Image 1 (tube, rainbow, N blue to C red):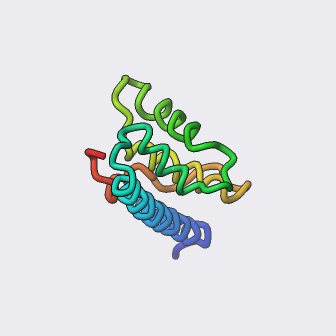
Image 2 (cartoon, rainbow, N blue to C red; image 1 turned 180 degrees about the vertical axis):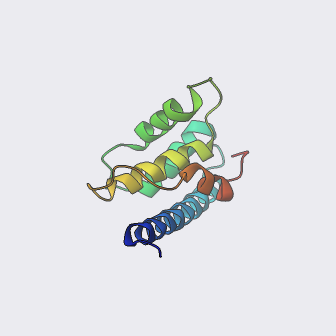
Image 3 (tube, helix red, strand yellow; image 1 turned 120 degrees about the vertical axis):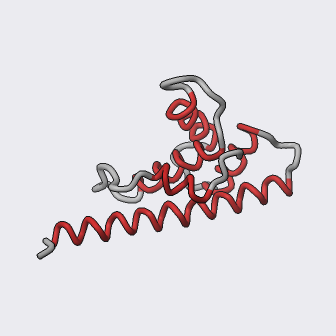
Length: 123
């Protein structure tokens, strides 16, 4: 018989995947909107504009901080590479999710996998 802890873990993992999918879809929509409205923006400037739109005025960290932290987390180590929108989305939704509750100490879901299903590699 399945234990209550196991069932709770399954539910938590499902909720995390749903959150990651929904947030990724929302950020992709904001990305496309920013591209249409500001075709001159590229790379970090575009990523920052998307995150700023997502955060609004309720942010502890600014959009530039999110982009910088995403770069530090994914594009600098273990080897240097170009920052991608997928990196920024991964960082943003993990950070956002963890800030929703003081009780969270981690996740059961690899948000990177969930993000990769929604955000195209080339962005």
